[in-house]
Image 1 (cartoon, one colour):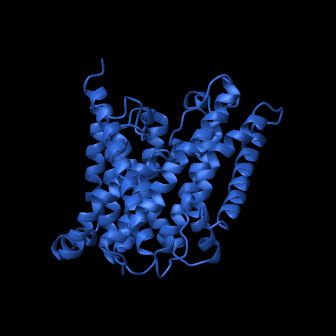
Image 2 (spheres, helix red, strand yellow):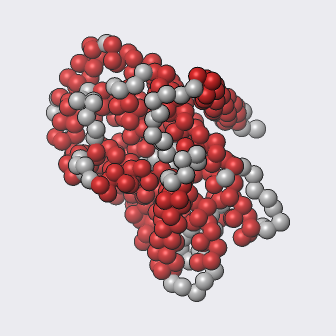
Length: 395
């Protein structure tokens, strides 16, 4: 039932965000890290990057699928207005606060290291995908109304999922998007993993978000399909990764990489269903901590890198210390922030619901949430219109 909490989805969200933190640390040990604003070690670690190359095709897409799933579950217990206010508060408040704090600090620490005379400008930095999630959520609320009020489409989808290999039919939108990404150069010619600031990232994220909504709307039909097909997803994903690793397809993308991404995601969901769908006190703590920890981690990583990278320590010790110190510092800041009620929402933490609010306060908050939503809609529309025109008229 959609009213039952899926602990595996909570656990996968925690795991994926922690993998992103480790991924960012690994960038500091790649030769191209300087190009994207990371303080970078002179000596690379190729062996570590082999692992992150395996998750590179699905690390961001799976977040969008999970976000779609979470929105669909929320719809069972809340009305449209409550969902809108909640998503605006939990997603866009940290997003815009992050522009002028963690995003700015991350860039300034980097500039202090390489060009001390320059000043950074505010940016979303590692929080860029929050704007996409907010836009997708606003667009998809009418779809959830349709799925709730019309049983026929859900019955047809469940019938497809109940067939032996029916779930693979839903890879078609991913394959089409992969073909478009490669042949229309929707990722600026930089490959599948160019998710940020590209038409490819916008379209792929929307496909993933809608897929998450549709799949969990089918209830047990989806989870049964995962259980049956998980080994197939896993074998296909690993086989396609090996093909990519030896063929260099990550730099190109295309339908094969899209199919790899699809299979990795649903292999991970299948493994999560089998091993992670259980309640625990550790999960209760981590699912609250992981978002603030993610918000804090990047400027802290840059700060610690300024001391570790120039040191004479071995490369592997530098990497281990960078990950450990970044996580320790981020958890420490989370422990401090969660105790201060007034700043908790700035880092995605909910305060306990108040039964009564003064009418003027409730009205003011509503206006504030609408202004945040309007800002992200205008910002995203303008940004992607500019990207579209640059793409159409490159000269």
